[in-house]
Image (cartoon, rainbow, N blue to C red; front, top):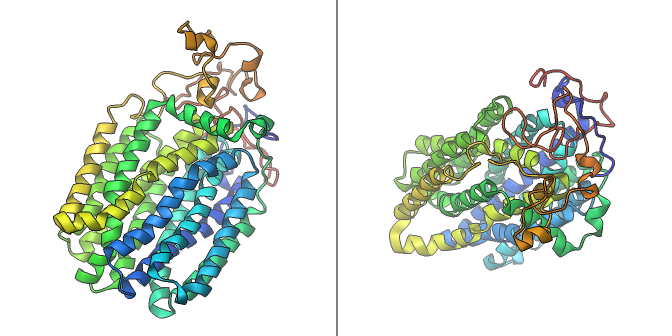
Length: 503
């Protein structure tokens, strides 16, 4: 983004995340939104069950949010790369707050069939905020702190998920759904206020001049040129379709049938959020070389989530399996988000995160809708076991794709490839690409954008597309475009202390 300060020699971590108050404000705003995102589906699912709905009706309510994410995420990514990302976040929070206030006022007169529309509208606001928040983060932190920053954001989201699940169940039990919706609207308003203080220089002028369709296609090209990214996105899509959709749809039904009611439902959901917390702490400190292999092998254990409900196991066993599911998902999530932030330049990062979320959620609405009919044919146990098998097998198969094991390009890409630049005439004709650009874009002045013009790293080593641990980075190896931000509200630029020295 314009206005970022290029300081390749300052890549230390002295002061840790505390030295970046702008990041901490973004973190606080995302934590507030995470509470609201969790309260709504819990409250709506219980409301449906209390008013005579079954697994099919619960699936439709959950599918409303998932469908909105699928439809709106790419638009959210394009908007995030064309507008100030803080404005997108504030607008999304305010929109969700208004929707929830209106829904709370009208709820007594709404038929159950209308509730998926409410979750869809709130999901549309979430689709706008996700790419903006994740693509703003690397502009607020140096590369060496990305894992810690993403881990702290994930910790806030998972901690808020625990709180949100318990608040959702408690609100329905004690005061009803309408007050829960009003409180959730207030939480989104608080999130908007927190983000107001975050500096954001806005998008590059080139991004604003580009057409919307051309802008979206640039993001698609950038992702398509990395097979390992597409493979992981497809695997996560299968996990949500076969594992999450079946488990989350049948969990409230199993809880009421076998575990005594809604309290067990809230405890199991809270366990998943609580299980994520130690994984976040681990991922923030442990940086293995083969982060992709660690992530995918861990994700194969997510199969225990649907499998635990097939019997079902006793309640403590189900709680333990959901806690393990939260652990493996969050461990892989922190490594995955950090890898994308390093691999792609800033001008396409919003669209990349939108495509990541779009790929993940593409089949989730279908999964929610199909749970009811599939259960009617093969039974709940058969549906859950089948989902567990898909999760385990797809995780292992994904590791066969080059680049997945390290979450990095097996062959370094040039800047134009990373940004999704279209192939030049030589490529189209089949002639060899120029020496400076394997994507076919001619070398020369176009390749000397200031964002890629740093001649050396801080220690004098020549710039290259791969940093010491094998993770791709832009020239200067200080993040996606070779720069380290200076927080104007902090005590000053990051020092040159060794990675992991503080924070």
